[in-house]
Amino acid sequence: MTAEMNRYADFEGLREQALTLRREGLSLRQIRDRLKIFNNDLLQRLVKGEPPPEWTKRPRAKDDLRARARELRLQGMTYDQIQVELGCSKSSISLWVRDLPKVDRRTPTEQGREAARKRWEHEGPLREAIRTAAVQEAAKAAGELTARELFLTGVTLYWAEGSKSKPYRRDETVAFINSDPDVIRVYLAWLDLLGIARDRLRFRVMIHESADVGGAEQYWADLAGISPSELQKTTLKKHNPKTVRKNTGAEYRGCLIVRVSAGSDLYRRIEGSWYGIVGAATAPGTQNRA
Image (cartoon, helix red, strand yellow):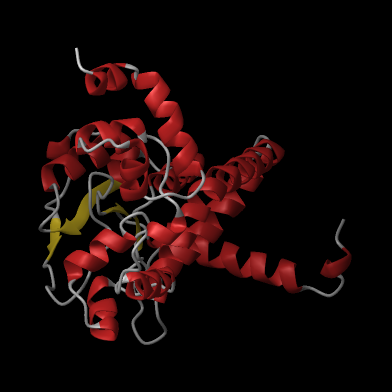
């Protein structure tokens, strides 16, 4: 084995010498000449892991462009905008800024909507819990209804939602229409209180023709306690394509019309009772009612 080979065999000793020279600021060429090692692969292995001194690093013409590209990216510019600003390729821009956060391309309005949506996702359940508790407390406070209270409630409900006779068209028909099943339930309970026999009631569904008509008929028949065959012919409302309807989906069942046959006497009783409520509510001194 030659002396040259023996010297190469002491790898750790050579590495220690090479690292010492590297840390003193020598370049690879200087270390090569100092240690007389002309095998480039071996030389690289000897200094592996030790960074080269700053003076050996070549300044790159694109360093300033890279720094500027990163600055513009942090300002929110897209690749296209940076390319126009700096005149360099998108591939270079992508390489330089790929570790930076992506640009939000949405408009301020869209960003505001997204922020509101995220805020609502957090606050919505809390608000709903507060709302539910308030509703339940109020429902509990209502307590039981006396016959008189139900009577007055029904009169008010009818005058708000039922058909009314006009001075120019005297039509004392008792007809009530609503889409809220709970309102219909209260109205039917009121009619029962008044002793209106169920065989005097006529039921009819009114609904958009594009909805589930059969399903709605079955739903309202069940609520009224009758067979769907006992319903009068359903009134179908034509859909206006220019109108954006929100009352769609499985929960949409249209309205139920409840008509009382031979109801002129009942109508007069309702009208008189309503005027009695108005008079009592607006009488002097009612503001001090306990």
